Length: 131
Length: 123
Image (cartoon, rainbow over all chains, first blue to last red):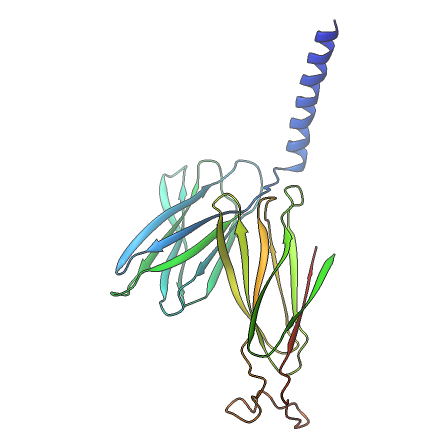
């Protein structure tokens, strides 16, 4: 009887918690990050994160740490329904400049950053953060 | 709200950690205000990101005299928000090519104490 009561209470708590999440929406609670090295005269891609099905806004910040080289950055989403990459933005990031993006992505979508380093001598590093 | 007054003496760079993230907070807001009426300040906004254990630069800001800017974002409990501030102006800089920058509207020349004070507030 006691065990049953405890179990029932536990399930009710889980159900209540689930409803609370649905009502309030999913709150993203952390920042994640990656350093992206782009070698000289190359193009690189990184998949930063996947979307979530809950209604929320995803944010990404891309910063060019180089003090001398410009990076050509494409922000893309791989859209699950049509199974295609979709370009959201093309930006030439001057040395020590950044760009931000905010938007909604579903669970079947991923956020991709493609960066070109046209310099023939040196690599560059992008600091990518998202939350 | 919490706040910090950051004093940058001439020709100096200094870093301060303002806060660590809060996993239940949602958005953090940070304001930056350059109290100097003549000199600009350069700030690098950074996060020490816990999962990757990397220091990430979010942006480089140049605050003109009397200018404010803000940052809004989410950081977790294992992340901390850091500012690296630069004051490149020499204490002896009075009449170089930057004399225009160092002259107030009433023609007063800033002398040998080119200290910049930046106010930070966050909530």
